[in-house]
Each structure stands twice: as C-alpha cells, then as structure tokens.
Image 1 (cartoon, rainbow, N blue to C red):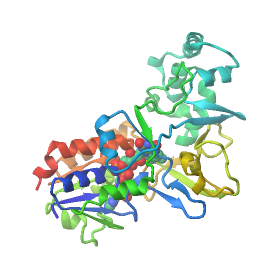
Image 2 (tube, rainbow, N blue to C red):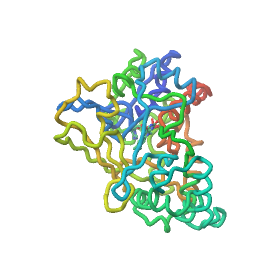
Image 3 (spheres, helix red, strand yellow):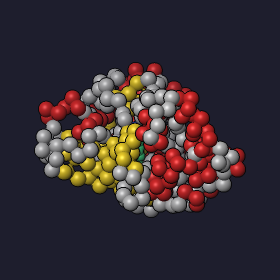
Image 4 (tube, rainbow, N blue to C red):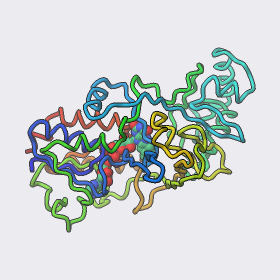
Length: 382
Ligand code: FDA
C-alpha cells in the first residue's frame, strides 16, 4: 500500500482515483457499509425509486475542470432543481424571486418597484447595527418576508429563536428581481443518469484501489487503524478533525438531521422534489419526494406508491452524524487549535467537509481533493 485514504466520500474517492491513476496502490477505508459518504443513494426495492439516504443531493458546478472530471465516471441528466415553500397555507417558489414577491404581496410589480419595496422594508434596521439573526435578516429583506420565509424555518433549523442567534449566521439572503426560480445558478447541473452508486463504483473501480467498508480508522482494534498506520504510510483523512485528535481541545459544534423515510400509498404526494415548510406548526423543515428527481424513469417507478423523506434538524450529540458545522466564534477558535495539531501530524492530510470543518458542496469537495492531489504533498509524503 502506498496511500491510505480514510473516508469513501467524494473527497476521499477523488484523491484515491487520482493517486491510483498516477500508479500508487491505494487502500480506502470507510466505517459505513457503502461508498460515497453523504451523497450515497440506493434504489428502494418496493417502488424502484432511487432514495438519497442522507437528504437530497443535486450535482451542480461552474467549475469546468470538475465538470470534465465527473463525466469520466457518469453521464448526467438535465434535471434542474426548483424548491417551493409552504407558508400559511400557500405555496411559494424559492429562492425569493419576482414571482414570490408578487404572489406574497398580491401585486404585479416589475423589478424596479419590487426592489424599491424590499429596500423600503429593509430600511427598518441598519445592517451595521444588527445585534442578532432576526435584525440582520430584516436589514436584508424587510420584516414581512423575514417573518414569512425565514423566521420559522430558521427557528426549526437551529431549535433556537432567531433573536437568540448571532447576526453572523447569515451574510446574505438572496432575492432575485426576475422570474428565474432555478434554485442553483451554476453553469452545469444534473443527476447521475444511472444513480449515485454506479458513479462512485466507477471511481473506485481502478485496479490499484482496494476498498474496505465497515472499517473505523479510529478503532484501535482494526488492522488499518490510526494506531497501526500513522507514520507508516501517507494518510488522507476525511473524518471529523476533532475525533481524530480524540476531542483533545473539546468537540466542534455540528447540526445533525433526523431523516424519516416513508412509502406513501399515492403515486405523487407533492408534485415536486423538495417542499420547505416555513412555519412552526409543521415540525419538519422539508419533505423530499425522490421520484421527481428522475422523471425519465417513470416507466420503472411504482405507479401506486411514492417515497418521501421528512427532514428535521437539531444540534448533534456525540453519537449523531455531523451534517452542518455550527461554526460559532468558539468553534472557530477551537478549529485553529485543531489545525495546528493537524499541521504536525506526520504524513497525514486532512480534507473534505469533516476534516476541514467546512460545509462543502459535492463539486467543492471534488475541487478541493483535486487541488490536494495537484499540490504534490500526498506523493511527497511517501
Ligand atoms: P462525506 O461525509 O461524504 O464522506 C466522509 C466519509 O468519511 C464518510 O463516508 C464517513 O463514513 C467516513 N468516515 C468518517 N470517519 C471515519 C472513520 N473514523 N473511519 C472510516 N471512515 C470514516 N452537495 C451538493 O453538491 N448538492 C446537494 O444537493 C447537496 N445536498 C446535501 C444535503 C445535505 C443534507 C447535506 C448534509 C449535504 C449536502 N451536500 C450537497 C454536500 C455533500 O454531502 C458533500 O459535499 C459531500 O458529502 C462531501 O464529501 P466528503 O468526502 O467531504 O464527506
């Protein structure tokens, strides 16, 4: 073995594939029983519907190199993501755009009039003096839109009143003064045509890559553990940086998700892939309905049942899956301490969303892994 990659998510798989292509013998370990980390999906046998097991994943990028790279392993459909939000018994398109504004205010405004109205509402609070998330949001989009689309959703995401959350949690709230309701504005977007599983299997299929699933690198009883491999072989580690150091400086804060999947006895539950619930009277933040990601597969989907996933959000405990970094100033100070420890680890490179304690979209994880590989440090460590 020339390189040990911990984590078979997109960051780890990208480094492994590049290294194998360059002639290295790579072992990839993951404590889960599947490839692809949080982007993993599998087909529900009963309905033929591909279910994204860790929440909806839509691939999007404007990075030409990443787009060229990923298409070596899979083709993409022409799916374009749209999100809707239910508020007070009405459904609105998100992100907030001219359609949302005219529907919400019962108007037929053009872009200039809408911009002027939002600016008038936003003038209630000066962004520079905003003392909490609520004041910051009002300073960006005004109180009526904040109360409809941000207050309840944010309170559910954080399980905290937005007046108790720091203003720094949001830097911008996008409002589009056109009828463009596409959720992502990247150049390229789509879903892997044959599903996420075949994409990840193609990345891991290089003959010089050996994948071992169900292996926890931090379990000293494993033959491929940190205790056995550290200092013996170059390591790319994509697990949580605080866990690697046994929480030496204390745990970093994460939010986790509770994802409840259900097969419903209807063909189509909500008519779209993702519906947000903005109000506090509905406990979940979103409902995902997976059949809508692949309209081209309708002949393979059950016609009398559908798969939905209700998503709720809360602070992660020690045994929960970490999903989103909380990144309070306290967390960021701790992260610097962990980064200092990481810099001194012999031949170990930390990366990916857990290893760097950063929210990364899939294309960002891939771009960051390609940069790590290009930098040469992984090979130099041999
Ligand atoms: P990832 O978490 O995928 O992989 C890390 C792997 O390391 C995991 O498989 C884990 O099991 C393994 N590991 C950890 N500790 C270990 C240990 N001790 N031993 C062995 N293995 C260990 N992005 C996007 O582009 N479009 C989208 O629509 C979405 N949607 C989305 C929804 C939700 C709810 C979330 C939380 C995230 C997204 N993302 C997304 C982001 C996407 O999930 C993210 O970009 C990738 O998961 C990043 O890949 P990584 O390899 O960095 O981490």
